[in-house]
Image (cartoon, rainbow, N blue to C red; front, top):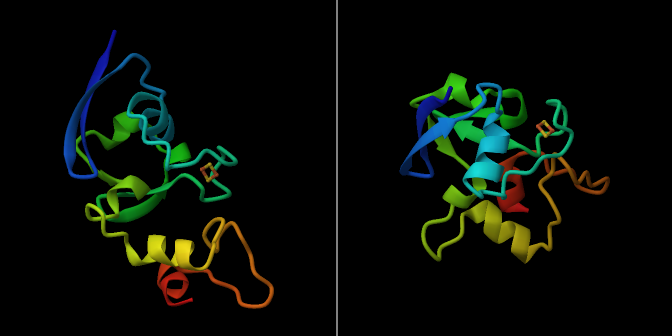
Length: 121
Ligand code: FES
């Protein structure tokens, strides 16, 4: 038995047949849609590496069942740039040689903990 769902991912509607209703949104994004910018870190809701926006709200996609978000609007890191124009956070990562965001790479000299703070760094 398959479970059809529809998601709008980074502005593109995706109609998906789930073979297993227990698949997480994270695994769907990475393994079915090949959007590997969303990372699997702890896979238990503690690290934030899997963060995506669902209907404009930040969630840990490793804790979200894909089927429970049928009809949702999902934005991953692949969706934040506008063509060749990087999002200010992406540009800041490159300009400041950031490995990861401030959630994952703590800096004792100058903590950066929010996207807006990161963009200003
Ligand atoms: S992978 Fe760590 S919070 Fe989801």
